[in-house]
Length: 226
Image 1 (cartoon, rainbow, N blue to C red):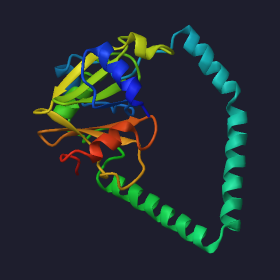
Image 2 (tube, rainbow, N blue to C red; image 1 turned 120 degrees about the horizontal axis):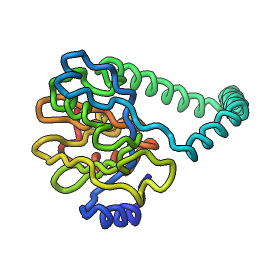
Image 3 (cartoon, one colour; image 1 turned 90 degrees about the horizontal axis):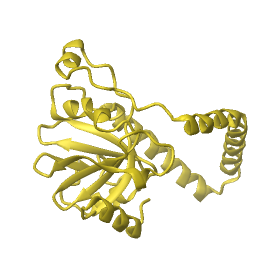
Image 4 (spheres, rainbow, N blue to C red; image 1 turned 180 degrees about the vertical axis):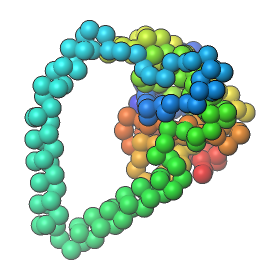
């Protein structure tokens, strides 16, 4: 979660007043229809490739994959043991949490929120999505909530380190055009945040961790809703 001090530094660097901000990613962009691609002049639909240093990091990550899998298995075994040894009250809390997780997943699928956007390429969100990697090939965006809208920042090219130092504003969305929304109004711990446009279209963003500063900020806003 981005701290207030970090937000102030970021705001000063970008020249904006940040109410809240977090680094976010989007899911894989689906392949648009041919006519949509041609009308948009065949935009870039994937992030930039990793630079050599990043490729070394990726190779090291592959080497450590077996260790990560082992740690995951141990963690799962520990969780199973805790559940088996849990008191009656703890088991009830775990049952409620499992029910909430299932309900969250069901609502997500029912509303189509497991997709990167609403599916209408001709809507405002679909058109913005087509320009996503044209504005920056970096795989993340710093999403900044301001008093009068949304600002997105990123390094022009994909980087492995120093994203804050290299970032610049790549898009501005005034409040009259789009708003940030927590689709669950804080009911569930989730990384999901939507950019919802005035035409009803939406784009899903995922914060780096649940209950981010964006989620906390949205809970205080009258527009936070479905």
